[in-house]
Length: 284
Image (cartoon, rainbow, N blue to C red):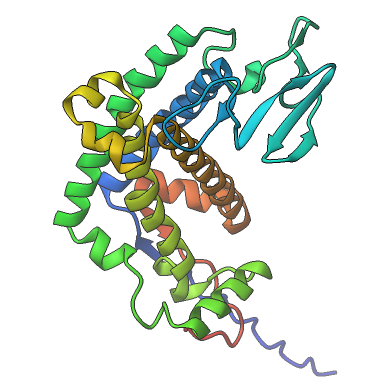
């Protein structure tokens, strides 16, 4: 009897490792992650002191708010304009760790400090605001000098073409994330979101924060006029914070879907192992 030799199984090609994140990017990423979380949580405690938002220069309990979070009777509510949404147990009216019912906008697990203290929340918020501003300014300067912004973050004209944008949106909706060489660089949706955070949300947060400071109002009154009054600045500050929270949620979700070990390792060491390319896939 003769035995037919088995054909060897082809080995999968080794996945290429690329240097994806510069040192300045990695340092700023982790410092900023901690700073932003502290600022969001302390900001929510500050919001608890007056959980209503207005447009214009004036805002008090008897003025019409476009957003309010609180309790009506035994119900927690979020009200946007005339629309009232029940949120009992989550926002407005909730039970703390000791089993006591609290009528405050945001629960203790979401705020710094966890107990009600406007003074302590302001201390946390202002202390970390300096870290945010100094870190962001340093990152902007270094990223402009080493061409990280122009070379890695700014979308090209081809990427901004409607057909390309629509294809990228469809691929992400289907969870068809970039693989192979296409994963070596940021895709257009990443670029748009990172540029939006760096050059829109962060400057808005800083400027509207300055507009709410009495000391800055005296020194630079034009900052307050820029946003149409303190209450408008407070509303824009809150909306920019909400945009930052939305970015963080999407960012963390995409990291998990793309492979958290590879993604987190790349943000620690800078080195990223390219996902294996799909069969027959060519870079766009």
